[in-house]
Image 1 (cartoon, one colour):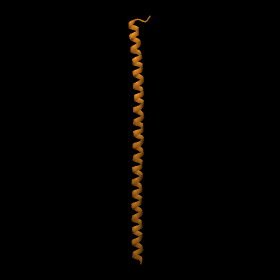
Image 2 (cartoon, one colour):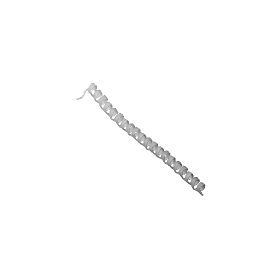
Image 3 (spheres, one colour):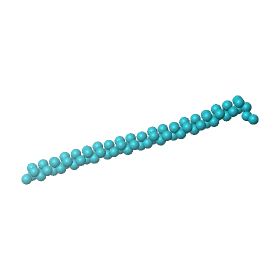
Image 4 (cartoon, helix red, strand yellow):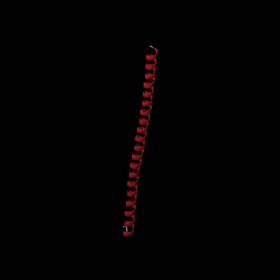
Length: 76
């Protein structure tokens, strides 16, 4: 037969193991969420950079076209 002390010790041990397991699961969830947020933020920043570069190229193309039109008009 198990004494009161040993039964109490077993209860504390099981509760501690369960708590550690749950804390580990929660930490895994948080780690995954932080990873996902970092990935999404990085993807968003990449898209912003690409849009800025595309906008710059469009402005440069428009300026080139405008300059060509002005040169063509001046030649005639």
